[in-house]
Amino acid sequence: MTFMVKTMVGSQLKNLTGSLRGGEDKEDGDKSAAEAQGMSQEEYEEYQKQLVEEKMERDIQFTQRKAERAMLRSHFRDKYRLPKNETDESQIQMAGGDVELPRELAKMIEEDTEEEEERASVLGQLANLPGLDLGSLKDKAQATLGNLKPSAEKCHIM
Image: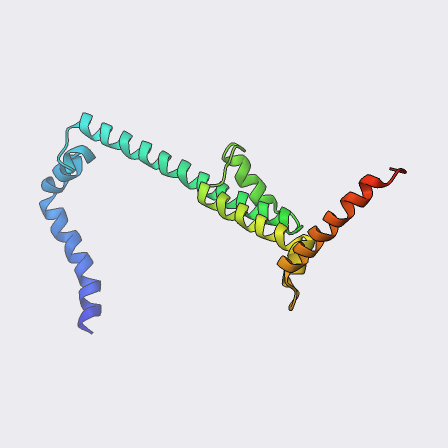
């Protein structure tokens, strides 16, 4: 109950006391933003200029990071033959279209690509078969090839 009385009467009381002091409030209101922060007008303008420049730099870095992420997503969409996303393409274009992945990410993608290519090859598939020794198979193939070379050299047809 006291809370309601204070809120209802408090604001009216502040208005009443404010109008009684009249002149002091006007002097405080006349202070510029620079004086309120304890700076000269030139210092305040320089400070505002620095704030704007820092904000622009942050925005540029943020846009670049968004474009790098979009580039990574589009790379994986291409790799796995998924439909393209227009927002990713627009983010890449907003960054100037000349977006490169960070070295660490590019290195990780390259390693993944090499591993997948190795698994996709015939020897990679053979290595996954249980009970198959590639070393002995390679030795046998080389021995057979070594035996065929002398007979191929003696062949008159070739």
